Image (cartoon, rainbow, N blue to C red):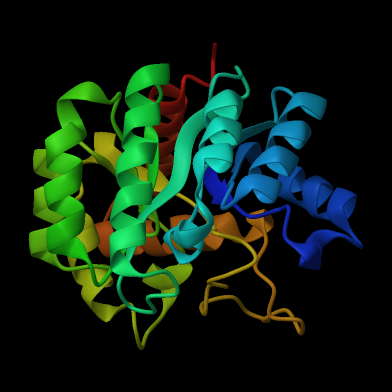
Length: 263
């Protein structure tokens, strides 16, 4: 089975000492492509550099996570806009709203999110979205810009059935991570993942975060890696009652289509 991890933070410092081994292990686990997530100027530039160095296996996104929205200024917008024009940058983001922690004031998050949606409309690329405890404001802004953007994915979806239906009504894709493998926090997601249409489902690790709790044995360092994406696949297959090979085929096709990976 071939898999695509649509969201991995491999520019994170935890991968500095064994990056090539992480890549080799991912390939051995069946991953054919990884999209590297940009969450600020530095990580977006680093991800873009890796995508250029390993065209075919890596792509990247470019954006400012809502946690750092307060630092998104005119210069930062210029950096992100320039990166998003590159062929190897396949999505605008990570961007969105996070009212759970509010590391940036909400007004800064809203302004930053709106500017990312404007960039996405200008470059004709999909958006890579983050939303936590901010559904109503997030939906309103996304709905306002939806006709101008080339689709996107609500990454690391952990919300309710109502939120899921709202995003599907806007023809958005839904990214599922190891959250679905969590027998504590992931119970609601386990119950609603079957309602995601097969052509809208995407898989991701969000490495180094969200290590699947179904792993046996668990790695001693608790670091998530792309090689663990098959654990997410297995749990999604279990929750949906579908064959894992078919879920792998469909999600790979979905990612290829949404992010233009064949081109």
